[in-house]
Image (tube, rainbow, N blue to C red):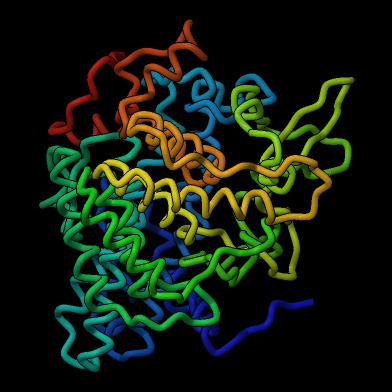
Length: 471
């Protein structure tokens, strides 16, 4: 059965001619000149249709990218969520012990990020130069490209810390740029998102596969939270929640379906017979295969009695008398029938962001109320015979207790999802306290930032390796 092509997603099927082919020769844009081809010419941005196809092409590339595929398993192992079944399968991440010898994996992540930033920058340049596009389309597409650029820079800086901030496509002017501080990167990211949130349309299309105003506000809420701007984080998250454009899925098994009621932004699958990147990454391919990664006891033991997320989002496989539990938020490995889309932003995170922002401002009972909204869904969102439902948290917690409750609720709700747990441990300064106990033989305090890939240091003499990493 073929996936249905709707008017909204038809643009994806233009990509082989308009976009994908034209980028196929570009390796690491930070190391070589971009190819001279159709996409770099003004003709690709001469009509509203082709310009729109160029923007859709960025999503298409992103949906196949290592910045989506690898960030979840690598970050989950680096934190306290997953370990690898086979020694050598990225075991350096499971030990939180990255060295320059691990640069191939790190370089792939770095390159995947910048390879997708490149077409976003290119689109912004070409859109600004075009004189043939309708003004509304030109402005909206530029804002959409800035949203995508902001998302990518936020993900990269979450992992590596300081990074080169590249805003243009001229290689001779960007190849030797030094790193920009994480704080300055956040300012740049926030600026892009503020513009996008002002310009992008507020409509919610049936297929939530392109950014709208609410996508920009959701990502802006995340960026504000990471930057410690709690009042603004609360405001942005509240705007998304109170827009009533999205609602928490009543059934936990429906959260990650395509067009889920709580999905704010998802990626349309572009690989044949593949729904998401996480499905093949985590689900055993056959009835006898062991999972590639399995959950740590630390994560399994963190679930409270009556938390249905444990049964809905985790599966198990017994092999040689040993039971292994693995992530199963996504249920499909390979199928021509599209039932799941990779979820990038969803409503439950907005409740968690607002809860943390409120508690940081001393509004503890209001923050606990948001946490209890998520816990209510976790105790009633799937069919189960568990006798004791997950209880509400007490509004009488002090601020320290409430912030730890936020941390735990984020851990349960966002487990094995786009690196959230690692980023949370890092941004709150809790990584050392947690990981030194779990990985006493390998955890080092400087490992809060991952090392810059050795290949990028060779290519760009202006880069400085993160503290603690030596050859």
